[in-house]
Length: 162
Ligand code: FEO
Image (cartoon, rainbow, N blue to C red; front, side, top):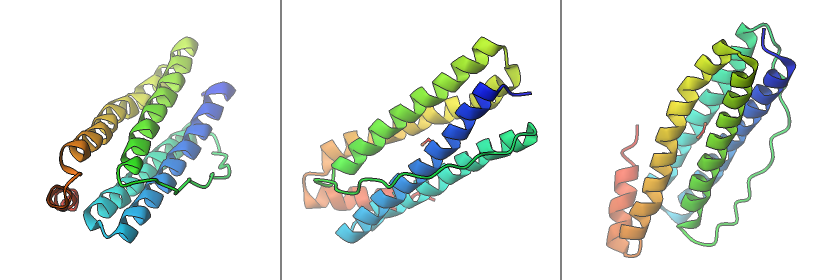
């Protein structure tokens, strides 16, 4: 049985994952309005993945006999100053999510809750990938985003995401 402290942390993580979905949909909308369909698609797909993450945790709590408690989702701040700003915001957000997952893992470790540690293993791997993807986006924007040709190429590449 998951402790009260751990179940609260997992509930909070559901909220953070749904907020991530909200943030990325907001970024997707920002790029759509700017005419960057590839960037917009990439973030829309990422938004969907975040909802999957939330469902995964929701499912874990249910499997453990705990009713998830769904809290209010904060509104994202969509006032981005330039085309690069959402990419930096996404990278910073992924680092925050990684630290949050690590915090839950640490608590599970302290309690000797091996099942929850095992469950979180998937998220730890996933965060490594998501941080890398977000960091790569910032790097690629710095390399190619300053010219219209480079931006077009990057937008086309991001639009290939399935
Ligand atoms: Fe679900 Fe992007 O962390």
